[in-house]
Image (cartoon, rainbow, N blue to C red; front, side, top):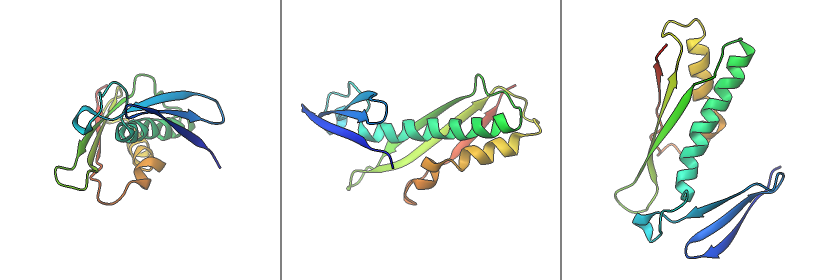
Length: 136
């Protein structure tokens, strides 16, 4: 079991601590929800978690198959719902892989990214496609 702690600091900001390592980050409410938008919002962290999780699981599969992962990037675009309740409506993730489109391990790597725990943990109401661009 892992603990992550959060402390409310005022002005719609929190300091979040990863208890095992002591690493911290600050969150802020977004500008469209009474905040200053100077740090990640809590919902931004969901998008960040999805991108980094997809890359991490993809890298584990790549290592097992001897495929280099250097230079692979992921970007997640977050869209909030227009109507109440306020929630994440869509997370579109684009993974750019600097390998040829006909790479023999393409399906292995794409399947790995799509099976990351964050992607599998999202509510069914969140539209969360993962798109791949093979650019090598």
